[in-house]
Amino acid sequence: MARYEVIGGTPLNGTVTISGAKNAAVAILPAALLVDGVCRIENVPDISDVRILLSILEGMGAKITKEDCGTVIIDSTDVHCTNPDAELVKKMRASYYLMGVLLGRFGKAHVALPGGCNFASRPIDQHIKGFAALGADVEETDDYVELNPGPDGLQGNRISLDVVSVGATVNIMLAATLLPGQTVIENAAKEPHIVDLANFLNTMGARISGAGTDTVKIKGVEQLQGGTYAIIPDQIEAGTYLAAAAATGGNVLVKNVIPKHMECITSKLEEMGAQIINYDDAIRIRCDGRMQHTTVKTRPYPGFPTDMQAQICVCMVLASGVSRLTESVYETRFFGYCSELESMGADIQINGKTAIVTGTDKLYGATVTARDLRAGAALVIAGLAAQGTTFVKNIHYVERGYERLIEKLTALGAQIRRIED
Image 1 (spheres, rainbow, N blue to C red):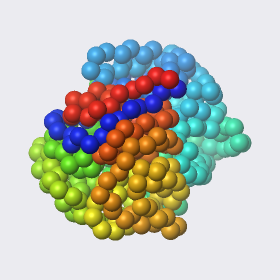
Image 2 (image 1 turned 60 degrees about the vertical axis):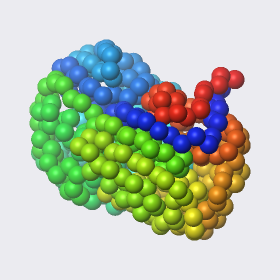
Image 3 (image 1 turned 180 degrees about the vertical axis):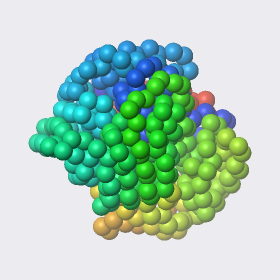
């Protein structure tokens, strides 16, 4: 086991460069299995989720080569496995994208149910609905999902999602890319990594339109060819450093970002009193004095992202007045970190889907436990802003989604180190 030791009270200052998007990488890497040839994928973040996923692909027969600067080369020519390693699959949530990939390439799949952060019930019923609409016979147990062609075979279809689901949108896109006919996904998710996946597939020869809107159309093609593609910057990693700079009263230039993707986050930080300057591919944040209270409600993109809920909550804790934070995607997410912040001096009252946050002048160092990826990032931010020393446990969650966190924060002046127990 390992933990972070964070000595707080130092404003973050300097420049940080954002890595490739975790949520895009974990969709694009399995999508390489659809390609008849070699994919060169650049800007891949070196995080534990990606390392697990690459191990799964390698175990299925893919040839993986890693180069410097986050480049991964995947040759899927010899992949014939439709039953990936169950123990590895259970270690990460996004492994369920293998269902769509294998259904699209081989017409069948046997995939264990995924693991990952356990901050809420996250059923895959919309994924199953999509696979069935494409003509698959679905067998779902407590341990796995098995997909086989139905009596009429697999082909494109019109699918209207009951709720906006990033995972289901991605899985249906992956499954439909190589199927005959046209697939139309209505009420599709619009997140930047949905667009990035579509751009990757189109670069390899797919025919996908409408990504980034609520209607995505996929015209099936017979084959995808190899090529080179660079993953977009990570919106949530960038937002986390922006929130850390605001919480510590710092002045930070965040490089390698797409400012348009960040507007849902930077607009709230500006509302709280932070100064934001947008450049072509960078954002500067400066926060002088105490922040002001605000109201945030998480929503699917382009709304405020649920994956930034915990980080903005830390800013609210340190702001003046009373803030309201409403979670509309995963309502139980508060329980992953609010009690930990309270042990550091925060005043948070949870009423159903809403947290009422009364600002405080100071947080104090404590020993806290991360219960999921973004909750862990929030606790690191709280430790950076607090007086004294904070120990963050269960840091394996944090390392699922943040590349070189210690190195990047240290370069900004933070006093943080990883302790091996």
